[in-house]
Length: 121
Length: 121
DNA sequence: TCTTTTATTAGTAATGATTACTATTTAAGT
DNA sequence: ACTTAAATAGTAATCATTACTAATAAAAGA
Image (cartoon, rainbow over all chains, first blue to last red; front, side, top):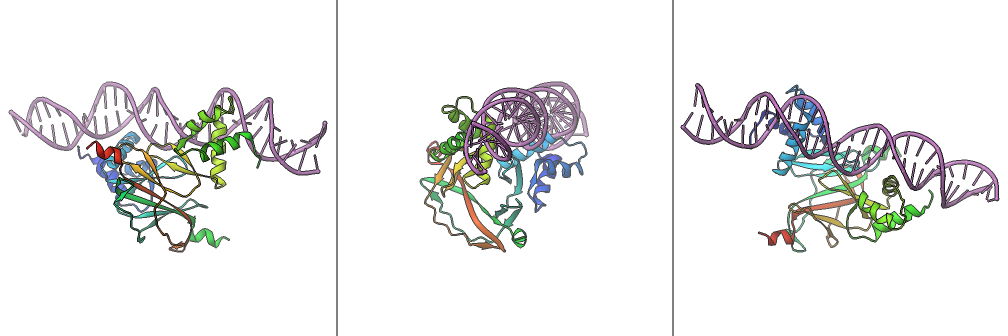
């Protein structure tokens, strides 16, 4: 509801990053702008932004959340090095209704071995 | 490496359930068979089974892991009530290679409003 | 512009899922 | 049966996230 400086900075960090930052990484970057910003403020705003459809959440295998811009794309996760790679050019069609459930969005998580890990074989 | 009674029970709980149990729910069910089984044993075995490709992990929005059988299917998550519904009949083709990364598996998470929540409107 | 209202914040404490640790047990190979 | 290395039960520790509270500041009204 209120457009605070803290919220603006957190959103811009996510929208200007191509990484998949976790809350603490966002906290560290936000401190460059607001030196005494609180970690609780980061979490509160991340939840606010997510609930208002302004960012995405992706979760890794290790119980930690990562935050991502809303722009439509999917993810490839390397099973070996756990690296997450953005996939933009996947031409998939998902129906608007599945078993009477109305579809609003979808995410595809592709697993495999990334190019670099394959070279190590 | 060792085929313990604990590990067998944990795997069978997951394979015989159509829910998406979390570690504590698996713990409670395992106690019906081994009354003094330890929660640590549950977690250790879940990680073992996951690392050996015998179960899947799905994570909800609330920092808790859920465990699922390996059988191929996808998930619909209701944005309103957070219910997870299995989707078996999705006819999607994902390429074997994406941007030089070799694909071994993929998961599709479909979001939307479930049938029951729609009725409430 | 000044005042009021109410969401938001900083800072800290609490929670809860998961992991680490250790002495003891047990599966599996000899 | 004997040995040994992996696994277990039980407990303590860790760490991501949430809750709490007094102080602050954005938005709305006068």
